[in-house]
Image 1 (cartoon, rainbow, N blue to C red):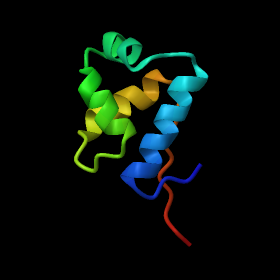
Image 2 (image 1 turned 180 degrees about the vertical axis):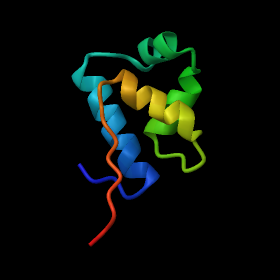
Image 3 (image 1 turned 135 degrees about the horizontal axis):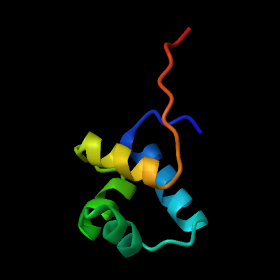
Image 4 (image 1 turned 60 degrees about the horizontal axis):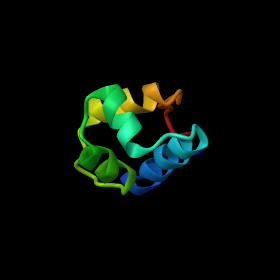
Length: 70
């Protein structure tokens, strides 16, 4: 999936969390981040902290690829 904005990235994170059968509280407990942060991230809040977002992405077994456009 190609994520060009916070909303698309949030949807991908939410879909993966649900695929794994996890609740937002489960992710919050595993990462130490608040449920409110998880919700904001999944809802595409553009100011969500990058480091925390990457931590959650890794925790959910997802990869981020950054490639130069042709």
